Length: 73
Image (cartoon, rainbow, N blue to C red; front, side, top):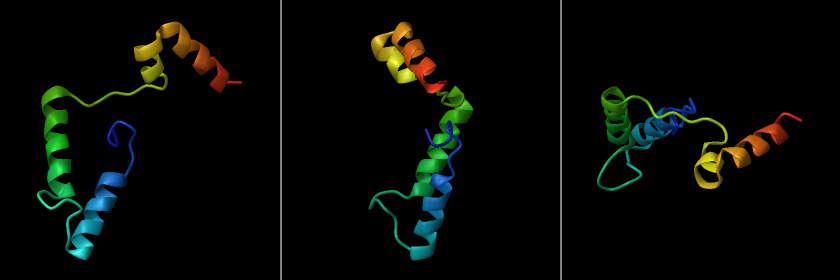
């Protein structure tokens, strides 16, 4: 999701791992996770996210549209 939302967090945390010389998880590093995510993006296309997607999926388009209208007020 960080890639879809264009958040710099993956690289920030990977840099922190390198700086402290310790991974956040024992069996893998964030660099490995980032590489796997980029590979999946290349194979399957990037994850897309639009505001209201969760509401649209769980409650339907009308609920999502009603919620989005409240954000524009």
